[in-house]
Length: 215
Image (cartoon, rainbow, N blue to C red; front, top):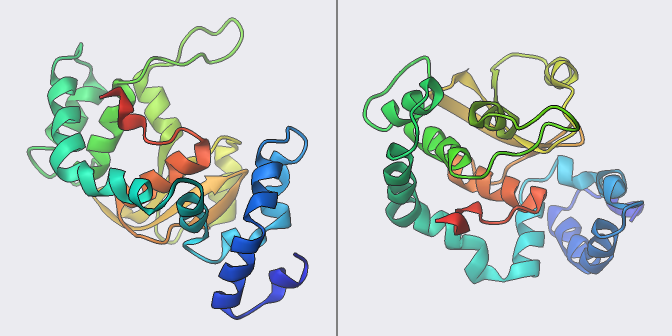
């Protein structure tokens, strides 16, 4: 594994990552080792596609592409329809409005539809004695925006979140140029630079695979 950290041949790196897949799975299920995966396998941080490779090895090619393939015609329309029947809020209204018209100040229709998913999931606890977080708060935990030119280290230091989230980088929220999965304060570049594919990678990282099963 130590030699793999310095290999320049991406094909060889990917083959060695395949060979160490079972070891990573053992680490993932170990309370003492799960937080050390990126320390032992830092190539996740500079080679896009390694997360997707692990996903495919774990679940097969059919499942790994199912969410992305069915999103535009199956999942997205249902997310929007169900969201319209929810108790309305300013955040929900903004996300629904993005489906009908572009807004330079808000997310594009794809990211907005993904954030609508959060409104369809049960509220989660903030912690002891703090009640439940709102859907808008939960959405901010899932997807964050960083303007192009901002220092990544400074941004992540200010956020201070240990939870995985999707980082969208662009000139504005409606025009995203790059996607990263941030895990343990470390940015992992997404191989497919689309919001849906990036969210699919995030779902794998968090262990919350295919949240669209609620539909």
